[in-house]
Image 1 (cartoon, rainbow, N blue to C red):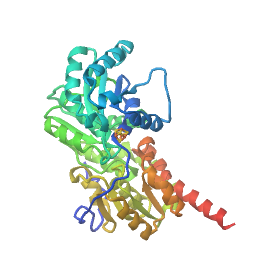
Image 2 (image 1 turned 120 degrees about the horizontal axis):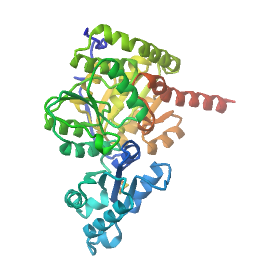
Image 3 (image 1 turned 60 degrees about the horizontal axis):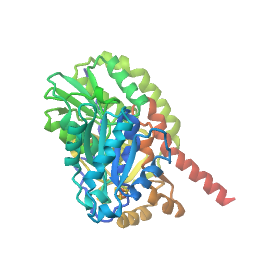
Image 4 (image 1 turned 135 degrees about the horizontal axis):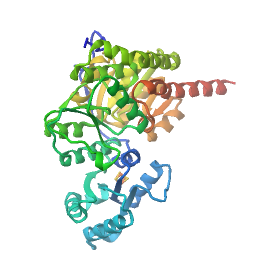
Length: 428
Ligand code: SF4
């Protein structure tokens, strides 16, 4: 297979000094991840052990969709629990028994920790062990933390997948593991491309059903599909698996580079790679071009939020002609986003962590054409005349691989178009 690595800029951002920010945060907590995880894992249930605030967050993030058989819920810690007057473990055991007797379809139960459960030091790891022993073999109970006012919303998925890794069965087979909860339609496209390339067997973490959970071992190679999976990456390496480092599959170039890295690992010939990817690459380029005219030459500023910022900055600067002013990310794992940093041309400020007031000052001074930020910052910035894009939309919208490349560019061109219309109306 010939080298399909995209041509890097003369100087990329991997060695750029990182501005470390340690101040006030303006983000959602990791409970948000339950919204897309419960759709993906069809026989799992996410039981948040938290407060009414946690329940409200989940309901509003889910668009207040109440199903007859929901796959997430909140075991509310009342004041007597928080005051230590009741045995929260006993109550939890009772709630779980009631839930599982009502819902025999549940195969995996996640106890999700929250700020209140952590404040009262409720040991959900021990609770998960105890409940697993009671409800095995029908149901496996795991726990992870979704709490945090100093975390970010995509850490919930990372914590969930990292909690699954130690209990995955062992294998000696050489298998490719795709890691990250993609919408089914997007995952199917990725699996189809890999199959056409002759790569396999391919397994997914998370699987759609518990019975399909992958095995892992020293011959497992894994490719991340989301850049926010630092803890899962570490957990897989602890199990002996090897990471295929690559740019993330956003846009035509990112998808090609990601596929090429996997194809090189599996010895796919250059001819076959070209034959499989030529048509979808051309479609992706055309779809991006249709949106890129509006993005060309526009300046973009990323607040740290989704952890997708670095791969997106790479896509928007290289494939859509934008200029990145500042690329803030909550965490920068070189092992995960290093290949994207290599391709991102030197120039933008690369910032890690958050100090929202200082970042707002820099953003206001820069007056970018588009600011990618959390919901809480978007409205005030819009009121100041800045066009914004909500970072959270990037995880709720299918944006990976060739067929979504145009939609991904469209997510950034739409707010610019809307702002242009508003400006015209204001001038009239
Ligand atoms: S920040 Fe804490 S208290 Fe608030 S919703 Fe998230 S877990 Fe619950």
